[in-house]
Structures are given as structure tokens and as C-alpha cells.
Image (cartoon, rainbow, N blue to C red; front, side, top):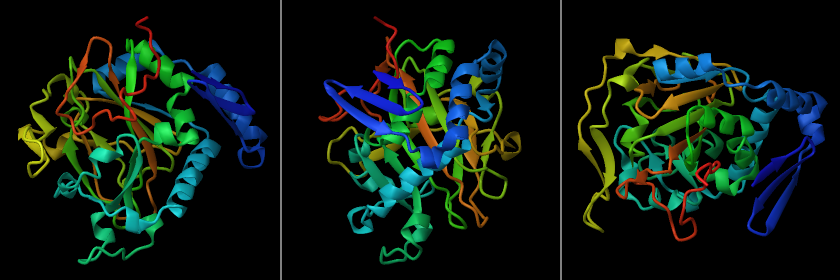
Length: 331
């Protein structure tokens, strides 16, 4: 259960309660009033629903107050401050898929893992830039392990949106802080999220929140509007059927992506949220600017009368036997 007030956020898990006193000095009375207005005034409209279904994505501006964006970035900085790079060696590369050769990715389902940009290390694996500017992403359990990220993930407005889109029991399967660091933030090739996160029947949505302005220069998202209507999930990244075999992850099938001129850039301001259909084609360019492009993103799948594929890279663990539900209207 998730409850919130202006002064205190309460997370209840079993019989344990964690009370987090919001910092009035950092948030400020204006920030608190903005949160109250957001909760009171927010309405996911029929028009927005139709636009999302038409295009496969939807921008909701001013979803998070600037103070809340800064709070998430500060939490991220705290986590990195406490992290020793020697304990986290994994590089994440969308080109060479280096993460496929290491169990570190599999083990991040219920943890906060740290994944480096390929250009942040030298040939010997040593960091050549400060660690705060060297990460590609961290994940995939921020919504479980970090109270500030959990609060945003379980926001009542997110629940309203998912209910409007007829999700009965949406489960949160992963969450990530995406860095896109200055100058070295890598390109993300054309893809659909369902290639990596598949269920049958498929009902998948991504929530992508800009914690800084995203621009043409720092690698904003690009979408092929409406492509979710004609794209089938014919390319999958799956676990190798043979346990212990190398590589542990494989790409099976193929997908004919639309030409690059079909993808339009969608720059957004800090605090904007982008809803992303699991089958819409999208990508982003490398960050060639001097500014970072920080984003908090998480994915949800319908778990009511839908089966999570056992060959997905992301699987429940002993400590997380079931992906947590945003809410459950099946009862």
C-alpha cells in the first residue's frame, strides 16, 4: 500500500513501515504546493488516450515539479557517491551488447546495478572520466530499493493513466536511471521495448520522465509515430535455452525497422513524462553536447491473464519471486 501527504511519505510492506520526512528546505513551500496542484488538477483525458493510441507515445508536460526532478538526481548522486566502481565492472553497449556475456545483468532484477558507458573506460577497463559522468544507466530495482524513486513510480497519477488504458494488474518489471553523459552518451539504435520485455498476450508500456531538458544536441528520443500499429514482435532478445551456454543471451528473429527519416525528434522540457507503447519504434542519437540528459524510466506489463515469457532476460528472483504490482483490480 502507498500513502502520501505533503509532509510524510509512508511505504508499507508487510508489517514494516518506512517513514521518509520530506525535506522542506530543499523542496520548499512552492514545490509542495505544486505537488498538491498536480494531484488535484491532473486528469488523463480521452483526447490524450486517443493520441497515445494513435501515435504509440504521448508527452505529458510538467508532470514532475522541478524540485522533484532535482530530488531524484540528488538521490542518484548519493547512490553513486557510495558506490565503489571496483565492485561494478559491467559496460552497457547497445552496439556490441557486451552486457550479454555477464551474469551481472541477470542479477540486477532485485538490485541497483551500475552499467558504464563503453567510452568511459580504457583498454584495460579503467575509468578515464569521473564516475558520475561515466555511467550509461543504473537499475533495475530503483522502484524497490530507493524510496524517492519508489514514490514517483507509485504516483497516483500513474495509476490513473494505467487504469484509463485498461490495465487490470500492471506489474513494475524494471526501473532505470539513464544518464546519457556529456560527450560520451551513446546512441540507442532503433528498437521496440517488446523485443526485450515480452509477455503473452503482450501489453507493455514504458514511463520515461525527463529530469533535465532533452534536446537535439543531448540525444532526445525519436519516434516513428504510429509504428506500433504495423510492427510485430518478430525480434526477441532471449535467454539461451541451454543453461550455462555461451552467450547466455541471444537475439532470435529479425525486424524490418522503418527508415531513419520516419523518426521525428521529440525534445521535451525538464519534468515532462513520455508514455511509450511496447511496440512503437524509437531511438536516440548520441549525446554530443556538454550537458547530460538524465532520465528516470520504468516499464510495466499487464500481469492479469497474461504470461511473462520465461526466456526474457529479466526474471523474478528468490528475493523477488513476483514483480510488484502498481495496483491490483483483479480481486
